Image 1 (cartoon, rainbow, N blue to C red):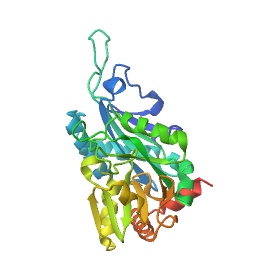
Image 2 (spheres, rainbow, N blue to C red):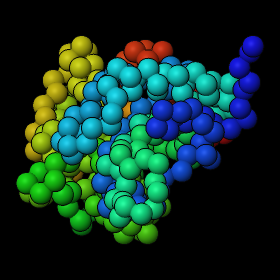
Image 3 (spheres, helix red, strand yellow):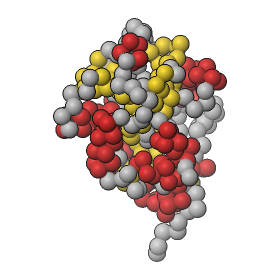
Length: 309
């Protein structure tokens, strides 16, 4: 018997494939109460998940740091994620491509008399449309990056290398920037006043033909960040992780953001001043965009522009 196709997205929740509106997390779940959980996100290119194993491996590093056992192996998480993608493929044409996410909470703080069927970790694998239309103009014009007054939480307090459900540090840092310029992309500085990261994004600059990006100790090491560093080496561009202070950023010849959803996003201005000659993308950024598109088999810039028309 052929499987009946759902007209809404299907998620995986604690061992079952369900319409996503049937996924219910108890209000005493620690992730709801405290942000006590971890997640990871990748995207699809033409329906194929991007470096899924690398994202799941990173996810499990976050879980080990938080000392949360999801109750299934990384291999099982990959397999269930691939099945979620397959079950939603018939809906993809309308939206272009997906975000694919895995989420694990520590579970329910139970008093003992509520009768919860399940109090261990809650595990969700979900899909949602990429914001292609909303972000399209960023690729036509280049992004405006602004630094925030709030600092990224220091590694001595809580490692930024873990992708946790507690995003308040970055959310609250974004608020003043978005109030000034809703289209700006906020970047936090680290405890020493160097560039760190934005919400879900890493940053790179080009100076004197070389590429620089903040040290991994102060940021979530993005999968697209590493891919960009690898591609830079392949095209003969030196890439150095380390401190990038405000002087270096102000004198950047090129600047761009990376994330799995953004891929590589050119930046046209930094704190209101043009980056380089103000034309984005610059030549090295363009070479990396071309290499990225070739590697994933998708012209992601054209895709963003198509859905934003």
